[in-house]
Image (tube, rainbow, N blue to C red; front, side):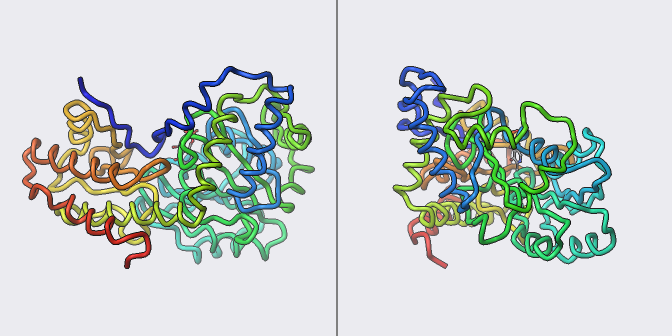
Length: 384
Ligand SMILES: Cc1ncc(COP(=O)(O)O)c(C=O)c1O
């Protein structure tokens, strides 16, 4: 028997409590039993997004909400500014391309955060730009982008909205939608919300809702105006992911019980412990200047092909973490601390990495990473 440990940045582990809630018999989505769950989930999402706006639930993965953001807020002839510093930044560009939206690509070196000054310059240089698309957390590189600073730049520009993909961020660190001035904020079920994949969530500011009136790109399934109308009445336009909605109620209860700030502090502490462990193992961080609170990207020590490490961890120890993609394939590995993770998930990852590195001939001091992680984890969430 090889016990399996799912320690990836999505899908993330699903707590037993949520699994049990989802195991209950299915209910019809236009009957009171479902409406009660739906309304509780809708209220809870507003709390999580820290917004007065409705947060719409869509049946699909995070990319559906990304596509919905583009087709509901852009019109032919608009230009997009896409911050591209990883796989998910590329996705914004590719969605714009698919819908014939002209775009300016603000290329950011992988492992670095975007400089808001360059966003400002790009906006100043081209008044055809009507939206800035970025990631709060670029999962492929383990970078947290300064989306709050971008929101400040678009707030003073009447014609420009900011669209934030927070798929691997929301619920793990503070992204207060209304206070920060995010115009479109997106997340998905299989990350901080601790649910299986298949549901996406999107909220729009008044400024972004106004754009839906003139948006003229083709859309049907992801027509957000139609969804807003339906969801205001406790229903979705189409058959919702009933089971995930029931699970979402439980997930939001769990986060409420923990407390939002406490939940953010837990993620920050686990991230800090992971970074400390990586350094203690003699590795270097891929994104030391803007490290993500939800996934730590680490350079393969001594030029090790990190694909081998990921495979060794999975095949010998049953521990699933992720490697790098595209430009950093084989060069980095990524350790998650997102959603239903705590102290012993980090210690499992770190210990397994120590063992697998030694297996692969990379001499690391046994216990060095674990000791460094423990020192942070014991010290409590607010330890410096
Ligand atoms: C930052 C980010 N954006 C978007 C997505 C896409 O979400 P999905 O795979 O649910 O379509 C992901 C998924 O990993 C992500 O990490």
